[in-house]
Length: 243
Length: 166
Image 1 (tube, rainbow over the protein chains, first blue to last red):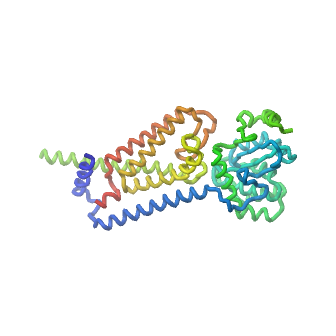
Image 2: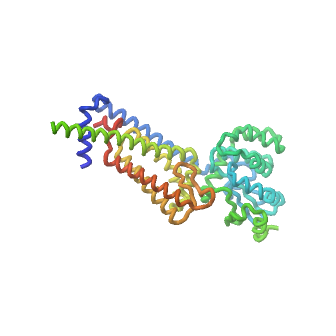
Image 3: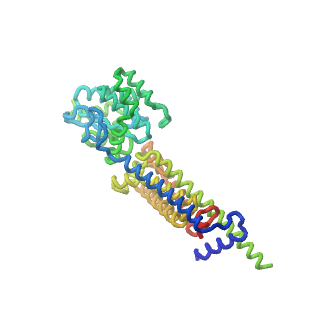
């Protein structure tokens, strides 16, 4: 039935429709096949690139203080008994809130060697997330990860993916917290740790991290009520054995 | 005289069908293209969008999340160009069916997630379930499913590359 009406449609059109002159069928097939070929190319290249880009690259250049076993995160005090995994996106406003409430406390634990803290700067919100993560890795090479991490959240732009984060701005922030080495500047501008940032994200994807901040205490998710409540967080840590 | 009247009526109906098909191709193709494009530009978030539906195991969810935007773009381009319209309609309709089922089960299981249909996938920003939003999305996808069904039934339309090859 469908075929019959389709035939009627095309036959009826040959008379009154002046728009399409009758062409040779081989030329028509040529155009059609060309378009099909182009569409297939776009789809296969696009999907292939997306699948390849999001895999972990074991040949990636890694910053210092990074633990491959800990999802390529920036790691402090790996021998401390209680472990904290922090998955954050530098563009995420909730993460900035988390840092405002708990950042100083967590940094002090990391500096004093009291806790095994692993920072996972993931890329969920857009390309600027990877840019800032890579810059934070450059700061880690200079021994200034914790200060830079805090500075990035203090300077978080009002809206995401707005183009506010540029390599120049990231270099300036490094200078503002006392990074003087020229190696830092070249590290940020060359984007050498962008692939490392992708590895961090790829690991987080495999671990089903879907929102930021996600905080894991010895592998268990810290409930949202404790995320913006410093006293609650301290209680959780103390209960886990942190002094 | 009577047969001329019938002929004219037949021509008018068939001409309307041609334009309707063209419009339907642009509608379904346009929506699919926008959905695919917006997800393709942030692949990590697209993968998260699939994971939060909690249907597929994680590695499958991630692979599907990376590939789906390109599948949508491919179907969209075929529809807009008017190539293999029937098959594209089946594929587009199948996608809509999958989306409707996925959103429906998210609603039933009270998952607090975003559709992620046009990017921005993941857990819902305020952590709450939004049943009216789920309903609206299901209704929208049903409309697109009906559009795909129409295209399966009437695949011939204006300005399609399929016509030239007949």
